[in-house]
Amino acid sequence: MLEKASQILPKKRLFPFHQCGFASCDSGNELATPQQWAKIKQGQEIAKKFFG
Image 1 (tube, rainbow, N blue to C red):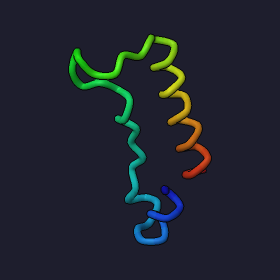
Image 2: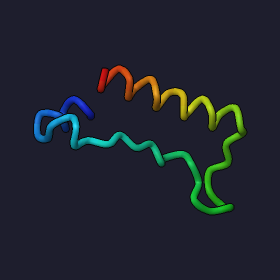
Image 3: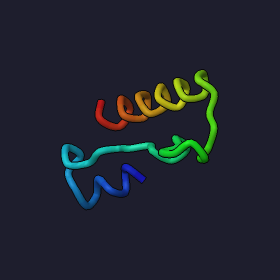
């Protein structure tokens, strides 16, 4: 999806954001602490690969 978006906008204007899966309220999707850190790490890896 980032590659497709970068065909329309320059990469420097894109901001990958992975809010999906992180609850913004107490009745949302429960993730254990290790799962939360794994999700953050995955986001970092995707950003490094995309932005260099």
